[in-house]
Image (tube, rainbow, N blue to C red; front, top):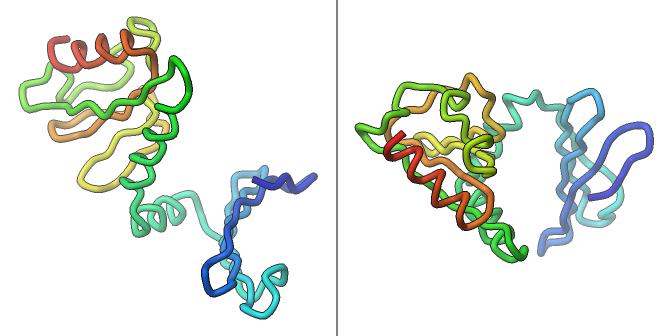
Length: 156
């Protein structure tokens, strides 16, 4: 991540062919997708402004579920922090209820960082996010906190 003083941040990578592809996240919440030319990876050849919704759509097209799995792998590498993907099964007491109703953070010290539904990732769900059977809930916390989170989603 590269800070852009007064603007926001830029995250990018260089492809095997030498193009630099990145996203600028502006302080006001806007996003911009940028692509450099092959001959000069520091010169922007094309850019497109994206809304938050368009950014989520692009992330899903590029495989957001795999990104969540990679986040899980990275979190496992931090001592004492674990990431689990917990299902909301048919018959769960939280099928059709909101994240806020779980009181997950208060009860377990674990945090729900995303919900995957039908291949679409919902990052940082708000307390009014309503769970549905089949959701995969991404939870970060200690091993004990994650066990407790699983019990809450399963039994209430």
